[in-house]
Length: 620
Image (cartoon, rainbow, N blue to C red; front, side, top):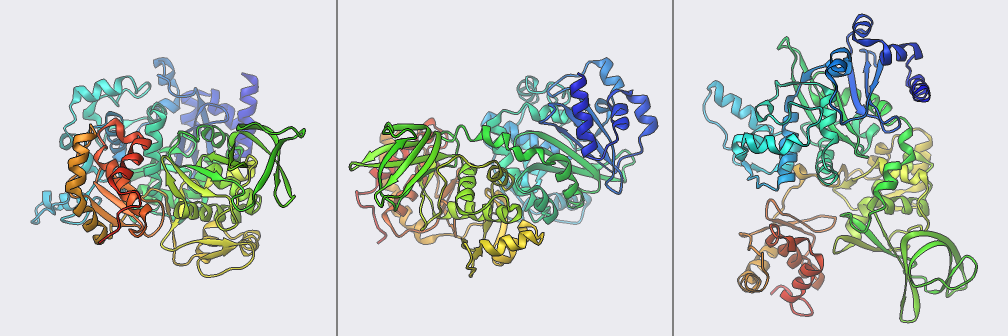
């Protein structure tokens, strides 16, 4: 216990808290706290990764710290004796639109259909019509429609109305009862309204109990909130990078006049967080972006512990990257560090790659690299999580210790990968090559891991991107110039803006920002084949359900994909045999979206080839 208290005291001093104030906050009780603490202007609750405690920090109007209070790690149901005495469990705030997040999580976990919300545009000038139009402004233009991911980003409460989605109170209670330790309001469907009073600590408890896969899906969608036209803020993204995945909220305090808002969700490593101040959620994000980063990230995040743990399952993670190493430099042999030939299969330990041109390269591997033979020549392939790939490219192409320049380059690396790689099953496939991007065969450095984690899922949209060591150009960043700007204390997002004035920083998956430019030629090509394809698929492929007239959208960059809840396919081109197979592949995913076979990439790939002749059907 003494060591834990000392550790918290040391961390408090680093954050600007006096140890005596910390002791008061930890042990002084509610009465002492109420008598000594001024009303906070800004407050943050989160689950601290270093101490494994739930922490509450408050700040005055000048962003100066007031106190830090820590209690047991969530999830926990506080005993009534503690709850009555402990300010961390007594603090109550309006739920605001955070109820929408829990409906969204319910939809994901249960797999229930959620039809698009159509903005009808209420007519007339009655109070009800004006209210309806004001609510629909968060959703879509009159006559438009919105799906669940975009509705979450835009905070479209009309989409998530339980009565519209047919959610029954008994089903809701049954589902959340086992997932709401320390959040007794959550199983009550009637509490899913903005005026419900909850404790931030209970919100942290609820968010900490969301299964990892569901949390990751929601977090990827929520990242787009930082860029949405309704709530984007440069200050937040500059200081938090891709770390803050939150649903914003705002409502009125007890006086029914003061607007109170903020956000709740997760950090990039999965830790739950809640923050708020007077104002709307967007205003709070803009005003306190740097303070949030200083409080939540500090420098302990740079150890990239979450990065290391999330990189161990690259084979299963969506978006994994497969790399053929030394694509244009033939290998003559691969040896263990002692000189013995390396065994075929996964590589673990220290090795030396020897090339046909007599050069050699020592490297080490932890099972992520595989040695195979191809036409009597050794071949090394690697499979990585996406951020691990970005970090390895940083180590090979640049210097991650030039922090702001490296953060800018990491976004370029990720954007380039998504545009240039080809998809193979669940992975992106790209060569390690000076014609593409060079990749370090060694495990990524801690500095590179931290940079890749900071910009996680951030990309550039609107223009092609590239980079060079010292020669700038149109849509090309020069590393040497980026380093000079970094040393002159230019922020990483400004370095990107200067290098790519036609591009915009964005979330990798931005449902609210995916515009559909109709690819009519591809739609005609597909429509001509659907009668024959559907007849064959419905007869021979159990579980296939022909989608009704899928839209095809022209994709300016990135990997082709399908929006299964909107029956839309995003495609870059329809010229090569590979383009036609890709279109067939994504169409099969739409038709199998309700069947387990839709997750069998080998089966989907095989059927895409069967639907086309061996060379691929070309447009008439």
